[in-house]
Amino acid sequence: MSYGMAAVLQSAVYQHLLADPVLSGLVGSNIFDAAPAGGVPSLYVSLGDEDVKDASDNFGRGATHEFTVSVITDVSGFLAAKEVAAAISDALHEAPLVLSRGRLVLLRFQRAKARRVETGTKRRIDLRFRARLEDD
Image 1 (cartoon, rainbow, N blue to C red):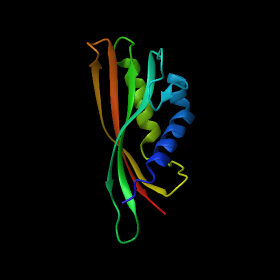
Image 2 (image 1 turned 90 degrees about the horizontal axis):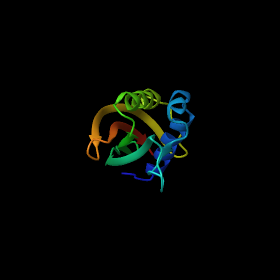
Image 3 (image 1 turned 180 degrees about the vertical axis):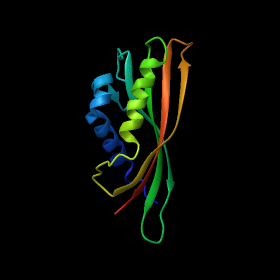
């Protein structure tokens, strides 16, 4: 197994989302690894949890990364958050990410969960993706 490409994958996902024109039109550069200190934008994207499993075989090392990208907003209703979530899903599903190490075999959207958080004042949509990576 190799966890060596986790940071490489996160960086590629982040760069790909920042470069997406549809997503940029909706949230600008408000895409974070963690919510910024102090005041947060009313609508932003946050890179989140990741689960990694060994996917090595006789041909080499590899891993399957299941990761979350979240849309968080205090805007009333879910519409704005769903528009951003759709842009993220469209941008990442089967995206040809450029990695600085190894190669991306497959990147697919798996599922999403939309919910109210913090006594209903915020909305959050967690999108779950699966990436299959092979290490060099």
